[in-house]
Length: 99
Image 1: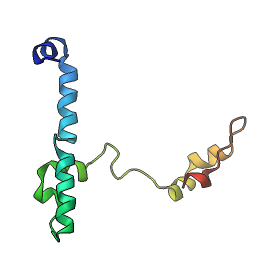
Image 2 (image 1 turned 120 degrees about the vertical axis):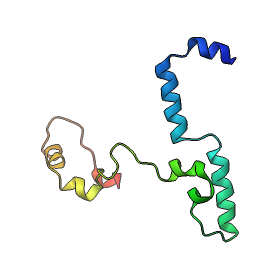
Image 3 (image 1 turned 60 degrees about the vertical axis):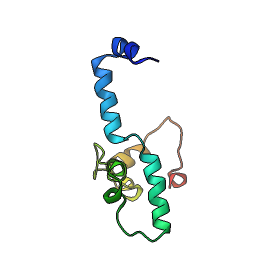
């Protein structure tokens, strides 16, 4: 698709979303990651983002709920889990299989 068609048809909101996407996933990060893995086999001790700037948003990603997620043991202690166990009239899920 030619650039002039994209300029005419892409909305500003979509353009902003693409910018956000490329900040989180820079172009060429996969090649940089492969090169870093090769360097590790050669004995390099530096962090990936110190060598390749494109890997910083990949390996140090901060999500919207960063630090607020709970593991399965915490979930089993929550009131939501006890309410789910007391629910009636639905499908039964074996939570042991989810671990």
